[in-house]
Picture (spheres, rainbow, N blue to C red):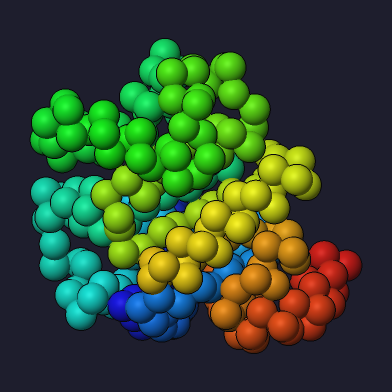
Length: 240
């Protein structure tokens, strides 16, 4: 589904060149669960933004379902983001003045789905994440775990093929975090490709594979059962 070949992403801050990604190559199969780990500043979020077509690489090739992303115009990229990719963020990014149901409806609204269908679909999506009775509550009236579940319902309302999650449990207590991870696991088992950026070994250990980024490069690739090896590597990196 995803094929990256020698991807670089270079930013210029005044006269300083910052290579956020420096020759990343990776493949992610349809239905796979992949975790991305690395120290702060290693390029994790930059890579996730590229996978989500929110940014373009400076050089290299990104093929999504066999199609070269660099060849797509802005309208085509917008269509891919809307129909094929779901995003879940650490800080939820819910619209405060909208109810949970209205937040979940937003992708359907942008897709031109009629109001009655939007309401029915959003209610079903909230029920699927255990929030049927909280549909008319605003984000400020919800706990952190509930807000993240609303964000998950919104991210998956159009049944995207790929779900990208950036520190999805970073602002949650342990019980809420486990509930969100269980939901992500269920979505992955139902066939969605899942890519998660995390610093949490408990999150990464659930993945089929872990990619370790350091200084914009993939330096290690192990199965989820190899999380101890990854944590030792990262501890050594922090020590330096």
